Length: 467
Ligand SMILES: [Zn+2]
Image (tube, rainbow, N blue to C red; front, side, top):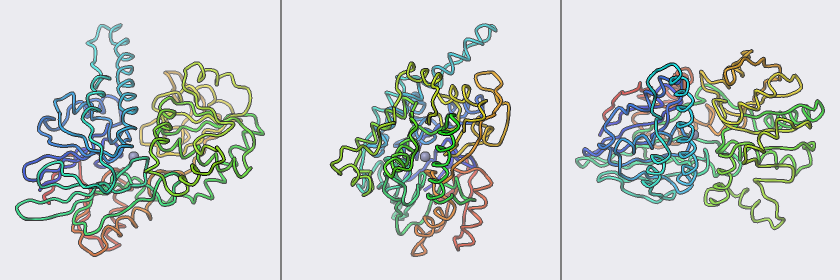
């Protein structure tokens, strides 16, 4: 039995781990690596193994840094099954097509310049037919329903509480009469998050692969986050500015809408119009409505109340699908909340809103999600000004603020709690930290050792471990 780490190794994107049991190869996640364009393109295109040698893929959740390179895998000859929960599959249907569209239009843009310079043209990483082909490989399995992707491996999904359909993967491995249990956390959510059920843990675990995005810090409480959101809305409603919220289309946007709905319901929200301006977020919200099996009790209760109120929509909230609707927001004179993707400001309609409002001192740019190194979101958050948007310099005169309490990721104490509950019974022999930048990873590995866990590894890309 062997485990090799090919992505999210000392970084937060490109989740991909290769498990070998009885000579069968199982890939855990196949995510898109995001970073500097050239390097990212090469890492995503040049798979470190022969795609045809993979026997099965198990996908923890739909976020693009976990699912986004599946079309490349299929383009390179993979034809086996991709196992995921049905909500993950339905979100992927939108996200992989959207990703293909981004790959195609990015390359078109670069190629226009290259053609003018007489340079050779690039191929997109993958195109829509590759994404469709990847979707044909999906086999959906609900939580807690065991399946065997290859001989000697039995798998079941447990709730990760991170985004709709997100799972931690429990793998029971058997080779030469030896039995081991490996758990891959996927991304771990938070207890008490709206809409979704809380994260679960497995028992009798021998090996653990655990994410460590926020391994060195604590989130503010949800009360504090709520106050901050209220204060921002009050500020713009009196200053006449805009509250621009860059938000991941899947998960964060629906949570924000749910939170805003809560404020609205309790009558604490001044009357300002709220726009969700992201076609992908609109589609993802439709998928949310289709999967009550992922809801927690509060969300189920909210749905069953016969007062016709929709927890994912309310009176002064508008979902914007069409480009024309999005452009109309540019000329809006009244104060408004604009929630738009991408969450790290690397593309999408949020760029237009930043371009239009970044120089307004009465507007606020509010970050509610993790901003990876090298992204425009991170630069704005760190106070850089001017910044380049669509090739032009823009001064940031709007107030820049952030709320950590709405993270879809567990903070240090919650990660520690998840790890220690997985260790309950003291069977855990080795832990592998993935999905974090080096500083939080090493801080978290020290915290785990202090809490009594032995053999905590922080794998480098390509590193192999015998189980
Ligand atoms: Zn995720």
